[in-house]
Image (cartoon, rainbow, N blue to C red; front, top):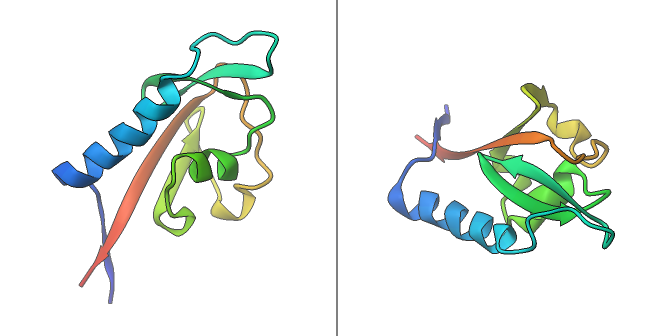
Length: 101
């Protein structure tokens, strides 16, 4: 049986912070360039309009099989990641899991 745990090791947390910082380094305000502002794990980010949950996971370079995503306090089923669009002002929480035995 495989057990899953929320990642909180220093290296994994630092990796997520690096990816968030890379995206957060972009312009923080939406403008007429097709960007929108939303929050990912509490960090304000400007991201392309029309981005889906799957697109965000790809931009953060996370393994889609090892994350759980909450959008505006509702869990997004993995089967819908590619279909759920993100919008300006959305609050996204991403939890990354690891397997152990």
